[in-house]
Amino acid sequence: MILPLLTIAFLTQNIFLSPKSHLWPSKILTFTLDPDSTRSDSRIAVYRSEKNYLILKRDLFAIGTGHDPRICFEAVGFSFMEQGGENGIQKARLKSPSGEEPILLWWYSVSERPYAEEFKGDRTTAPHRASSNGDWRWKRFRGSDVIQWNLYGPDEKELRTILESLSNPPR
Image 1 (cartoon, one colour):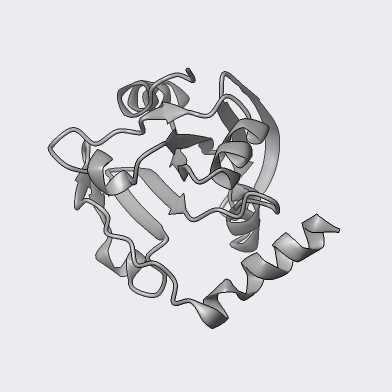
Image 2 (cartoon, rainbow, N blue to C red):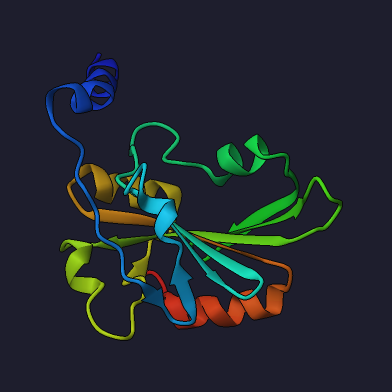
């Protein structure tokens, strides 16, 4: 009974409340924000560094799908060839419409305080990874700020190096 009520409340919140507007840093490590990516929906920010992309999503729905990367990637023609994960990091090998096979790494970071404080200064990183889907959902449900980090590019080794600079392991 409570799950349907919570779902209805979440889905209708924008009718009664205006959605939060989020500010994103112009750079994260070597990634530069695409300012057009936040114009229509400030909850999603797209960064680029040469051939790699960093896509950040916030205000995730803890009870539903969150925002599974499959939704967006499959919508633009990618297919998921392999998928697995460990230590709070998910990995997928994709097949693009052009036949390339890039890698996608994604994880959820959790902060007890608003991310506006985390995103100050030159070194912007994800505070701590959630250890699992259940972990980030529970913490989000209890009021923590959660961001989904999607790191996409052709070279897994390079992406793992970037991930180590961006993210701290689960507590």
